[in-house]
Image (cartoon, rainbow over all chains, first blue to last red; front, side, top):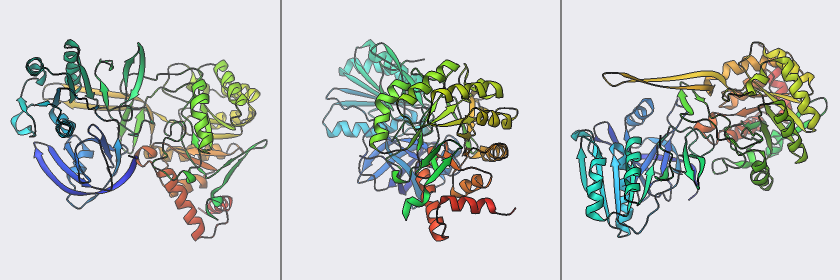
Amino acid sequence: MKKGNYKGKIQSIILKAKNVYEIKIVSSVENILAGQFISILCPNHTFRRPFSVADFENNIITILMKLQGDGTKYLSSLKAGDDIEFLAPLGNSFEILNKKSLLVGAGIGIAPMLFLKKELNKNNIENYLITGFKEQDEVISGSDEVKIGGSVLDRLDDIIKENNIEVIYSCGPYPVLKGVSEIAKKYNIASYVAMERVMACSIGVCRGCTIELIRNGNIERASVCKDGSIFRGDEVVWE
Amino acid sequence: MGIEKLKTVLKSPNRSFELKTPVLGASGTYGYNNEFEDFINIEYLGGVVTKGITLEKRLGNKGDRIFETTSGMINRIGLENVGIDCFIKEKLPVLKEKNIDFILNMAGSSFEDYEKLATIVNDNDIKAIEVNVSCPNVNSGCLEFGKNPKTLEELVKKIRNNYDGFLIVKLSPNVSDIRSLALAVQNAGADCISAINTLHGLGIKLNYNGKTFTKKSVQGGLSGRCVKPVSLYYVNQIKNTVDIPIIAIGGIATMNDVFEFISVGADAVQIGTENFTNPSVISDIAVNIEKFMDKNNFKDFEDLKCKIRLEEE
């Protein structure tokens, strides 16, 4: 699927949980894979705002957006029928393996996990999605298990053992991704994490969103927007 | 007819360099070759100024590298690049295959670095180079060469001695008198000046969690629409000082911006930060200039340039 700058229309925008909006976008984008993202133009802002895709069905892109600052505030003010401009499809996608999969989403990190879960289900791959939220009114539905308060990481040991998990996928704040990667290492299973950084170009050119990876003993800089946003947990150099 | 109209020739006393259009992609914002191909009409790409290339590969700076500001951004990438050998082996063939005109941007931390780079690009028949003497984001060298007229003249002379092609020097706004630096560059035999590089900037973001403040700060080079008046000022100063052509850089986002820079002496422009906001901006502007010329019967870009500069205050 060729990347491009697309014009789309908002089909619906609804408040899904506290400070989280679900936005559905109609456009001519033909395909998006689980783990990929789009980058939306916000008037009077230099940077576009990147959003993981939470679903793609019948040419409709669904994203979940948490209110963060001016850019997201602008987007939350849009109404059904309004035009938006965005780059898509961006970044790599989750590698779908025929293995018992554990999906871990923390907060708004649930977005790509919902898309991935759908893809795994389509492929009849056994999976279990656990998500964590700080408070009840932040909960977004669609998981097999929800943890409110505390750390979602606290449940992973039990789930891995009970379900003979063979691979973990995760999206959420940095400490969660780091924790997931460490737990996967402990059980000697693969982990794939969706990293997040402030982005400028969204297409791998400006090198503004790089992270450090270790591959074959060498340190490399990879851009989250193009080389990622999905990385193997054991290749990320965690701070 | 068509794009022929946008052809731009940069002429110095000894050399000339032809551009498909007067609108180029600025160093560090446009990659090495065809990275923007999915987003633009490549026929209307005046050329790519490559990412700053050093002798050896560089990993660049650790930590947060970019910060969004009002109408702009701050970056501290730190000259991450593949190095000259890799550029010649892997990036150059794509530029040739795709027929993309380009200017190689080079950076070093010693006279020897620049001399070696000049020799390598000369041997590889690279038609134009832009010398970065003004990157504010690396610890060693670079900006220091762009601050002192004597040092800069010596540096450019050394490069000139090793390079026969079209030599552009990119100047920094973070100096006390840009005119003396522009003169030094001209005296040393450079063919063209590009200006400006980024301004020193510091971005601060504070968050209060109810108990304590957390602070994030990014110090680096400020760019984007907010720097346009600064760049207009410096381009005007350079034009009043030297005779060699000028490529303007700094906050350009529309056709009108291009016209404003032409009015103060620019012969061509580079688009930087705006590529991140609108990845098709370079071809959009070139197409708009072409339409404007067609509609108003300008015979070529030179004609348009002359008319803009004749405009009375």
